[in-house]
Image 1 (tube, rainbow, N blue to C red):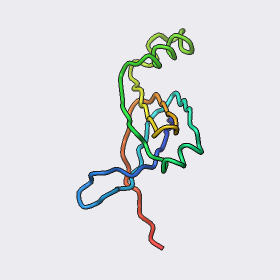
Image 2: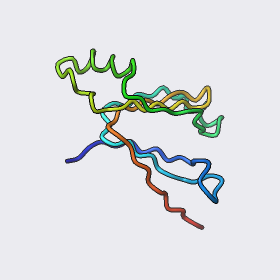
Image 3: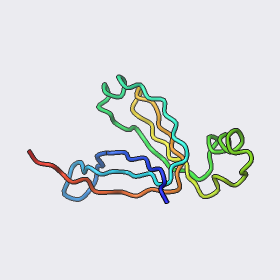
Amino acid sequence: MNLDEVHLDVELRGMPGHELTPISVVLEDAVFLLSDIDLQGKRECADDISSAKCEAKTDLMTKLQKDRLKYSPNALEEYFHFSFYLIPPGGTLDVVASGFRLENQARIGL
């Protein structure tokens, strides 16, 4: 079965022996993606993420369930709301997905 995924390539701090570690955050079985991103503002702030969180129940999920999935009352029961807040004025990225995984990025040397 083909499921939609959202891939975010990031550099995480705190990995042993590395200052920044490139990694892909893969949001699995994504059903909604909403973004409000100021691309110029994002570039001015080095494309940095200010914070991120994952929650099982949010106002956004309730609104999506009520407005878009009203005939499937339990459609988002097994899903999570992943929120990414970029450094202002970068904006936000919201994804409703069933889970996530981390994938190592292969470093390419020149």
